[in-house]
Image (cartoon, rainbow, N blue to C red; front, side, top):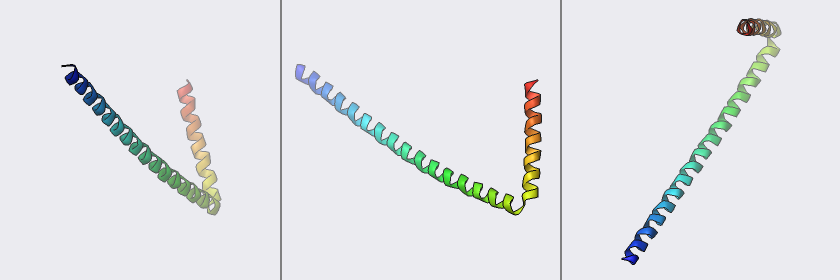
Length: 83
């Protein structure tokens, strides 16, 4: 009877270890996917930033005007929220 109980406990420990290993593998896979997405997003942001700088350099008047309008809109929004 004690042998049967020991066998069951060993089987439970083995199953718990297997589940833990599967969980760790799933976690590592998730981390890998998140790192790839982070890298892709970073490169996309860099590309958009370079594109915006290029546009503003070729059209400085529009860039200043858009910055002014954006600043005014943000100021008005923050002013109304502050009241």
